[in-house]
Image (cartoon, rainbow, N blue to C red; front, side, top):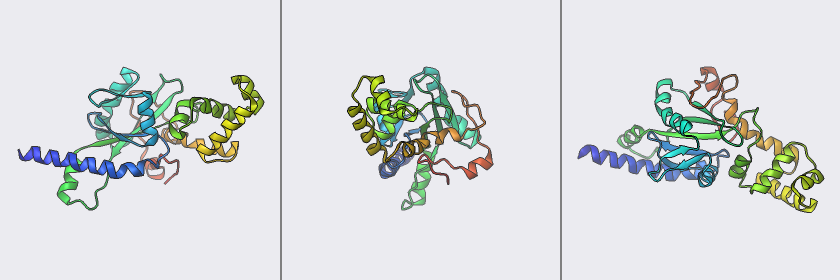
Length: 247
């Protein structure tokens, strides 16, 4: 009975921490999803929630378990907590089955409760949580799905955004999609507004945040089902920062 009471209190503390932290993680650009050790979906930032709502590549089962589109990828994802415990370093996965390949970083997630008692902090620490950050590598074409999830672009706006990144001009984009140049210009302005930029050059710079996850695995082979242990020096000098900044 005592153990059940402690477990219930730990779960309550975790939920309170998640509620407090949710406001902060909404400021993180890349999709971020938090699960427990059993793979149960707990919360996500704005981009992560949009990805969940889209059901690709993540899907939440009726039991609340986070799954991927491919069953083999799902099995690999659910094995990550054990691998992280063994390696004591963030793990990576490569999802090749999507329209545009994606890379994942999975790391322990430890929300802080500074005002909680030592006993409560200990209880919360026993409930292991994991954060999943979604991005790409420098060799990947920018994913239209990520454009939609991260910047809340429509499917058509994401298509136009990708064409801009290829260096296409308004008349070329209009002809390719069978739309008027005026419509394309309006969509470009909407893209600028949503991404917070004023030019194609600035747009390209803003989208470098997608590469943040991939840079953690430069020189390593990132494949689904493998955990890549980061060299200790790189772990110190380039901390995980889904907002695109180096710390």
